[in-house]
Length: 98
Length: 173
Image 1 (cartoon, each protein chain N blue to C red):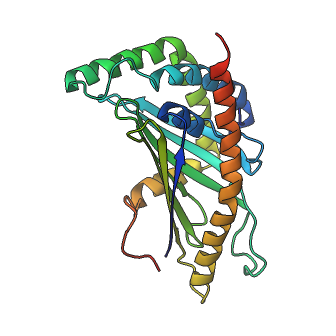
Image 2 (image 1 turned 60 degrees about the vertical axis):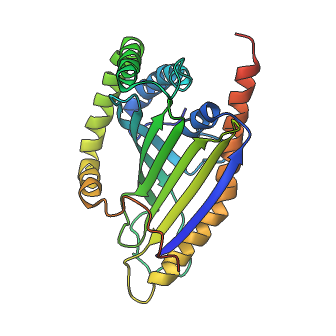
Image 3 (image 1 turned 60 degrees about the horizontal axis):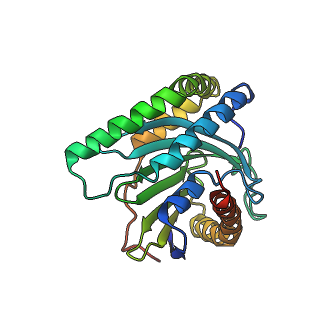
């Protein structure tokens, strides 16, 4: 697994990645089909979120706190905010191929 | 602005291609990726997974680049993805956060299951420079050429990850 942007967060990142990947494999192959009702979708969403929280919630919060601290320290939060504000191209233009 | 688009069909099911796509770093061809972090992630009420990742890449400058055009050869890239396991669609957008005056590169990936159980990936990329000094076109063309040249490497890297997943699926639990 690749490194974190901050060395001190890399061990947490690896723990989190391993946990997430195990959850994600199951998430990608749901037992229900696409033709379910909105209510069933909501139920699916809640179940998956609860499953994730139970197995990875703790390590996710530790890792996220570590990275967010590092992002601030490196001044990357400014860069991220700018990207969100500008965000000039939501959809690719189709008529400007030159 | 320069624009690039390409489609690719995998024989693998959608779930394997999507898994490989999120796990694609590191691979033996991704030595230019210095770090990759998840900065936000949530399951939406409709059941999709939204992820934002912050990736640090190294790159090289062309020889004709004016001195001081870019202070350092690294670039922060923001990757935003949406995975819908019920509709079997994955979307992913990446864009650079710094050096945007020199060049903005945006890549849109769309991975979806086809009717016959294969997986279609479409890639769209845009290269936009606001540099001026008569170099705008040259910079955009360079970005596009670099992107095309790197595609083969990134495909090979992706194939390594796909193979690892296929192999792990064949092992008895």
